[in-house]
Image 1 (cartoon, chains in turn purple, cyan):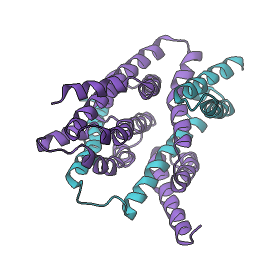
Image 2 (cartoon, chains in turn orange, yellow; image 1 turned 30 degrees about the vertical axis):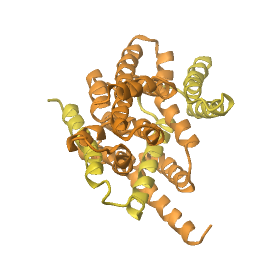
Image 3 (tube, helix red, strand yellow; image 1 turned 180 degrees about the vertical axis):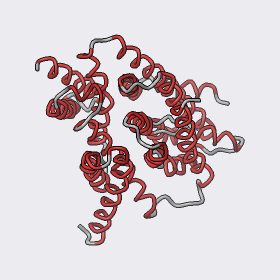
Image 4 (cartoon, chains in turn orange, cyan; image 1 turned 90 degrees about the horizontal axis):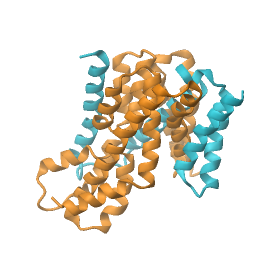
Length: 234
Length: 106
């Protein structure tokens, strides 16, 4: 194990990305409190699921009383992106001398933030050290997420309702801005628009299944539009 | 274990399944096919759908604020991102802060 690379990862997690992570998990903790979810769910889900959109889907659907199978399907679908992400990250961190199981442990470190940073920084460092860097980065981020989530939960509990509204709003604002400014392709823009319209509309029809259906219907519609545009070379 | 505990275990296992499968399949599958393009579309649509629904028709505490206040707060956050040299932290803080102020002034 390359302790220095691990430490570099931990150190780099405490930058601007770590600050944004802290803000969004503060909001998640506050949202969980106002939804009547126990604090240990905030902490354990941050370590085990380690994907804020999935955690948000789980807490939100649980709160409106969606069937367990619908929640599980929705969480799995929002997190299906980890398959292609892990597939593309493995060649970057694979090196001679690592035992095979190490990669399965490192896979838990794959989330949006650490993936983006590791894909960019990884190739700059020696092959054998990259996996330690990734683990250090993720360990730092997870620690930030766990602490911020728990702190957000208890802050929300003890501040007046006027302030609590702002805290609960942190996570939605974060995703609203992040999703819009991170749009890199036309396809993603179409998918965001279709989902953004489908989500509220479907909620009026079937609240409990709306998240899952918004993904399926909005996403499939976006996929179809994207294909049609590609074929007509627009 | 409570129901939400069981749900958490299932969701955690279901999420890890993708990561583990990614390690297993790495180097053996192409991620540029139609299936992954569709998965990308579904992922973005689902997150956008959830976020817009929370903003437009929230439940619980957020429901006590006005919908146009929430929309305005989001747009202010977005504007702040570009004004403050693409700083997401400032954008999020200003967005959430402006909802507190708007709601307080009501």
